[in-house]
Amino acid sequence: MFDHKSIYSLLFGLILVIQTSSAHKTGILKNVGAFCSNDTTRGDPNLIPIDESEARLINKVENGTLYQIGAGQDQIWLIHVYGNTGYDFGYAYGTLLRDQIHKLLPRAWAHFEQEIMDALKDLKLPKWFEELIAEKGLPFALDIQNDLVKKYMDEEVYNEMRGIADAAQIDYKTIIRLHMLGEITRGRCSLYGLWGNATLGGKTLQLRALDWDVDGGLQDYPVITIYHPGTSKLGHPFANVAWAGYIGTLTGMSSLRLGISEIGVSFPDDTFGDESITGLPFIFVERHILQFSETLDDALSFISNVRRTCHLILGIADGKLGTARMVQYSHSKVNFFDDQNLQPLADWHPRIPHAVYSGMDWLCPSRQYKLYRAIIDQYGQITPELSIKNITSVVKTGDLHVGVYDLTDNIMYVANARGTGEQGPMEAYKRQFVKVDLNVEFARTR
Image 1 (cartoon, rainbow, N blue to C red):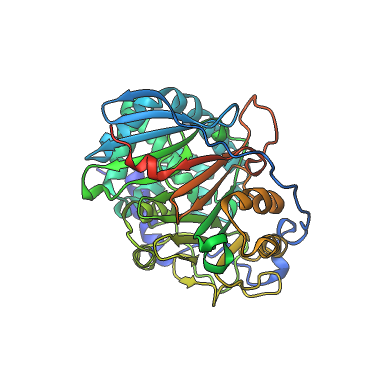
Image 2 (cartoon, rainbow, N blue to C red):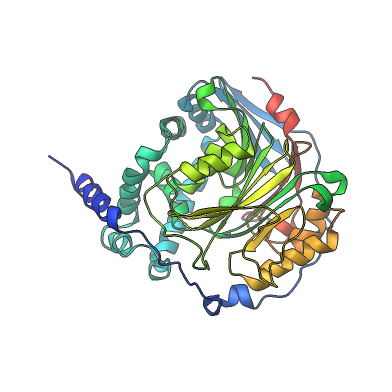
């Protein structure tokens, strides 16, 4: 006999053969919201010195080591995990970060569940999925979503989640559900990829500014995870910037000097394709690129061939090739852009030699133009330090966290939003950045 969830999965699987969501389509600039059309203000430079102190050892277990980096109220957990299976990774992670996971996950889940239920009519989800959430609840709906995407997922990712659940003694299904939320709660963000004449010394630099919910407490437990696979089936070493208990990728770099950035699109035009709720969730598309792609071409090929889901803009930069690409991403269409064919082409989003960039959304004139101006104002002199001082802070992007990648020298700079009970500005782009030398971190042994 089938249980109720199996029946729902079967029925909705059939529905998805003929139905995808195109509810985000606007196609015309007049539908762009006030957020994107009216904000022309500029922020103050970030003059706080970058923290370059050594990582401090906190704890060790069989397949993992926990450090802290940063100073004062801008500290980050830095965890190294080793192993031959995803379960090895997860068990070490869950053991070393048990307390942080127990404090964060229930709070984050309660917050996002309430936010989604309150804003359900505004999320532009497929009608059947919206009704499923309303009638059966968010946990049930996310379980159905997981059933629909499972065949596209790497089994080792589920094994890693199981290892976290077992070690931290937290519900396995809750961990999975939290990783399904990204398809619903895409944030506004900004990115750039710069190389050649755009930067000082011709370095390849990348920005990933995450403008997302700062009320869920994620920034209270920021974590950078360094993966050290013991077998090729787990790929190569990579760094993932997230929060305690979260193993999907929104921000990160690989040991082969690839970087990833992402923007959720709320204001597309008619050059985007349809959306779908079935496919590989984008947080695991991004993770696959860092974990398995060896070159920019590998990453672009994977994106072309994977079953994609929602409307996004991706940024991928390659420090070995010294270039970057921007990706217009949807279920049914994908387009790749360099500095010669960058889209959308408009007076508020001009092309820049040796640069790809996007500010906050696709059709987002004021934010796009502010990022353009900040890049042009520093053009030819841009370094990670100058980007932190005069780009993200002036454009005012990166509420929750910011990553600036030096893909030439394999160094990452990270800042997080103000945590609960902390002092100073809320936004990550206004706070102290921490320098992470990935040459050192990828070389660390057990």
